Each structure stands twice: as structure tokens, then as C-alpha cells.
Image (cartoon, rainbow, N blue to C red):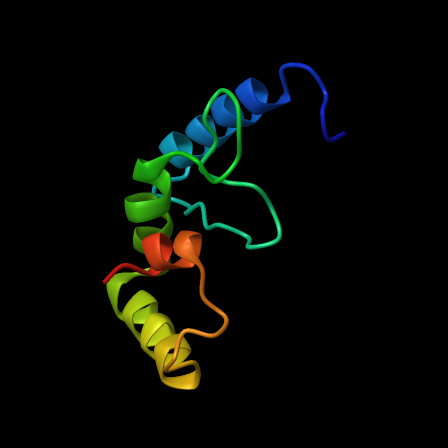
Length: 91
């Protein structure tokens, strides 16, 4: 439930467990966009390592590049962009 005391800490611990356990050896953790990821002890989508490295890597370099290029091509003026997406999608 949103606002539950200790939720962010719990989700960060769960996220770290999933990323370490399912690292591509026998299974792979991928981000589902409708869920929170990149947890710090206080918020979702706030850990720069997860946002900038782990999320793109989980999709593979080729798929990530293809997806970000498609988004840029469909929105060349950045109408639907924001600071968070700019950081997630990279330069």
C-alpha cells in the first residue's frame, strides 16, 4: 500500500535480491514499467545506478538502443519527454 512505513526500504532490499539472484545466469530480472524500480530508502525511481545502468542492461544493448531511437524518432521535439526520461534514455 502506498505510504506504508518502511515500504521503500523493503522494495529496495527485494529489488537488490532479484537483481543479484536473477542476473542472467539462469534467469534475468527485467523492469516492468508500471512498477516502481530504482528504489532508495525513501523513493522509487531514485537510484541512479539502477536507472542508468541496470534497467537498460536488462533489455540488452541492441534492444535498448532500438527502443530509445524509436522514441526519439516518434517524438523529435521532446513534447512527451521530461527530466526523468532524459536521464533514463541517456544522451
